[in-house]
Amino acid sequence: MSKSLMASKKVMKNYLSELLTEPEAVEKLSQPSIAKQAISRPLAHKENQSLENLLKTVNEPQENTVKKGVNVSTFSKTDVLPIPTDINSTETHELPTKSYRKGDFQAMFFKVAGLTIAVPLIELGGIHKVDKTTSLMGKPDWFKGVMLYRDEKINVVDTALWVMPEKCDEALRASLNYQYIIMLNDSSWGLMAEHLVDTVVLSQDEVKWLDSSDKRPWLAGLVKEKMCALLDVSALIELLDKGSDIYQK
View (spheres, one colour):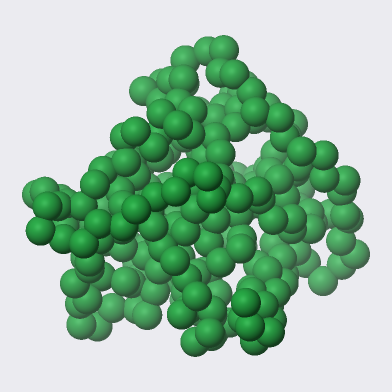
């Protein structure tokens, strides 16, 4: 890996870290590994979903398109991001209660440009393998295009560009090896991912929850031990529908 590419990835990590923190001291927590846990209870229609089971449901591209292979052995461990000390905000506009805010819940972790992102499994709409997309005029740079799967039109998001548009330089963009489309609930939006990491059962106290939607509506909270962002899928869909990037312009 070139020095410029390594520098670009470091900049991206630092940038996301800044998004999750205010200009105050950052508490660095210890990072014990998260043991894989067996799921002991149903989780709505996503019950008993291991990463292996999810991989079996990944939708292949159509017959007349180029298929990209998946090497399960390349799934990598999560990177570490600092946890903000002030994330328990007392601001107004409380978020509506999510079903996964009660008791244990399962989340799937995926990686983009060295960063780890989590999505509650109950809000995962499906997984497709990356196929060719058709770009559309007048769309933001992070809008990769429309991908067709059978009769379904998927709006594909270049996740790295959405997270940090001005920091994702040419070297980093050229290095991205997107393999999957992570569908957001029942919407037509899908996030591009390089690797699927794992599915993990989380308890409520394993997440540092955000209880305000004012500053970062796309962020439900931070998974403490994994030190990564947990997406608020409904809020993210709303931002994408508006054509907003992470700055919510």
